[in-house]
Length: 98
Ligand SMILES: [Zn+2]
Image 1 (cartoon, helix red, strand yellow):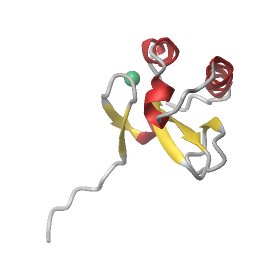
Image 2: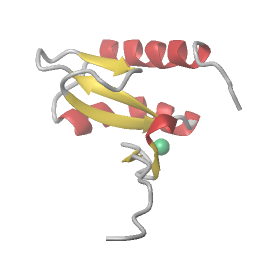
Image 3: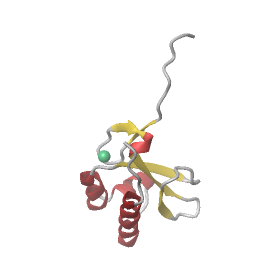
Image 4: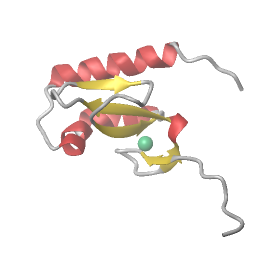
């Protein structure tokens, strides 16, 4: 089979449903133990969902309880607060190379 394009992994933002390069999305994972955390490496075990880096999606994640839908469970507000903190921390730790 000829002409197979090199595939860039694409993932869908849980809020806006736009497909994006995996590296432009942040993975949020629910571990087998039920703990929800930001996964900057994208390699943690568990059920993952993806959030793009638009501020509107980040705000909507909390406002519309996007993690409740993604993980089909009631996610406590304190978990949302922690996720937002971790997202902010991931932002400030990101080095701009372009
Ligand atoms: Zn989005």
